[in-house]
Image (cartoon, one colour):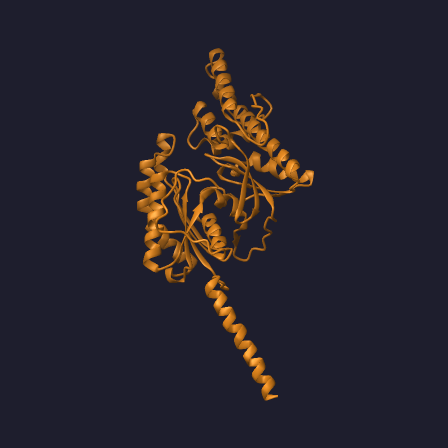
Length: 367
């Protein structure tokens, strides 16, 4: 018996030592805390994710850009400098965690406004040096794609299976992406000119609406007739998109109608918004159905700032009637946020994918 006990203890010690070895080599831990930093445009955001569970996420928005009808890069970078330390402080308090408990710092390397990215990148690198924690660079677009894998406390959440197709729609991007794993992304289709978000904002500007125009159009469209007016939908082969023709069609239509009735926009604003929004939604959904059929993948997700649009979300959900499994992001994860940066950082941490202090921010950064 003593001999058997000794052998048993020896085996236990062997596996304990082996576990400790792999824990150091492969970063295997029961609890992994990732600090995410997002500063690609005009929102300063910092979040803490523990494994896949969001502990806290704070966003400081910048109202200074409203009167200019768009984001002013210089003003954005200055605001980031003022906001980033208070946001970090508030994030740590809400997460009830200390900097020393952080295992890695994930930050947005790009794409985005270079001045804004410089602030977040520099802060992340300085923090990495200060607390001696590894650095993880994140592509902002991958954050939108993987935002579906963020869980909140006490949430029993279903995650999309791999592979799946993601429709990524924002102010600067419109893409259909095949997601084979948290590390494998393939762009199947993209816009050849303008993005869906830009199409919304430009139309809103033509109608004299406030910036950002997308949410305003969505709100007014709720009271309009979506079939009152028809606008040209460009015929682009394959899975690519084009919105420049739609914008031109809308502009010329408004111009011609105003010549006849100077009050045309004011008298038809709800119908104009509803009809324009329906046209964009149809263009997006048609391409998504084409991608599902072409690649025989029945699970799809939606991501990006424009995914907050109510008509697009409704049409996307309706695809379930075709036997397609759909995943919509929570509204708070549609806009730029650090939680999505942290979740990408979590997966990269598991994959030992760390970055160098020498990596510069990139205004253009392919997924």
